[in-house]
Image (cartoon, rainbow, N blue to C red; front, side, top):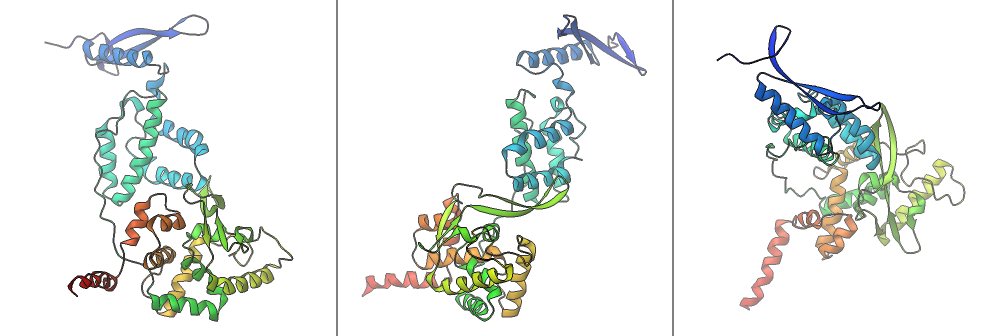
Length: 377
């Protein structure tokens, strides 16, 4: 039996139904046409559309494309509510993996789990599972917003499957006692290496370290006030240094200054004042500035540490994060409680600290078990 149609366009036959969906400002009716390969399909599209209108969607919600809606949301809705450093990461994910994906030209109302799954499968051929998962997290925030704002009726992410993340390495990257002693001696020999010693004995993140000013040091109480972080980010086509508050309330903390490194710290401050021509007490001067007095470039700072490791023959722990790991490992060896260590590290999740605490050497494990021998004496 031939299909019943009532409309022809570009040589193709369709069934068309018309529905009044509202009124203009002058009171005239707003009419919308729905097309299908059959009367049933056209009426189903009409009924789904009207159900959306009844749930509060705008009369033109079905015209919104993913590309336009996502970019508008990212720049004008999400950006004002997050840090610039976070926006920089999201903007990069959008530019590299979302903007030109298969979803771009689709209407939001038409996107299904199969469409998103196709994008993820395609991404998995060229990027790591971690990148796919990060992309998914960003899309999840977007589609959750669309649901709450009544822009879509269903979440297309509910049925998608993500690539399995590889297990995180349990390798201990903390410096050994011998290598840490080499690092300390290097700072004693040349104070320019002191920032790395400071990092190893405070556990600060590189962004926190490079954002410190003299005002953040409380020599009276022997404490460091950690409240901000600096990042070199790409914003609106330009790269710039952005100083922001630490990400979490856990990151807002006070960390003691070890008495043994205070002479090195004071020496470093004196030379920094001299090189920056700082006169008197200026609480705003950076503790670890570049030669220009501005914030140091984190990548250059990390490369300096790698070169120092090569010079000293340190083969393990040649990242700034390893110095942070070193600090936490020292705390574990000294019997500092897991909770207190988590506070000093600024970890929002104590399980992160617990994982580092489990990174004790085989020799320490043997010594711990050897204590059980007391039961046989």
